[in-house]
Length: 136
DNA sequence: GCCAACGTTGGC
DNA sequence: GCCAACGTTGGC
Image (cartoon, rainbow, N blue to C red):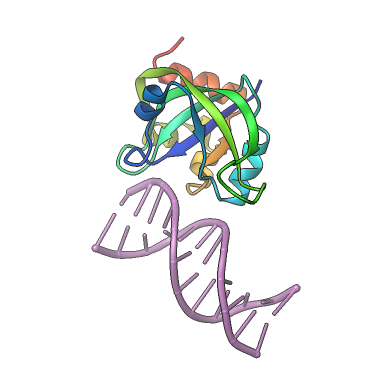
């Protein structure tokens, strides 16, 4: 099982929308590097949901319920999507500032490439982030 | 609101 | 196929 971080603009589609939907398709990713990571996402993987814009923090955890497949709404199979379900909102959102302030995240793509919207999270970093978020 | 970083487009 | 110009994203 792999771990990921997915960015979203909360004004357009936030973690609360995923909770409301109970299960939803994560679409609209167009960046080639982000799509490459999306293609590696499989059922059972977990992902942090990160809000961009004013929030800039990890707000929840989602689970992949269907691994990547071509977006049915698009003609081109290169636009892949995954299906997600919410797992839990985190007790204490982890801000970008907190991540940047921690040397353990110096190589983390969230810090290294601010424009990337889908990225892998190494297991030790996932553990560290869940702790920072107030989870075990 | 600004701008750095990065992608994309189109002329050559 | 290169690269300048332009557009977009997202942090500040």
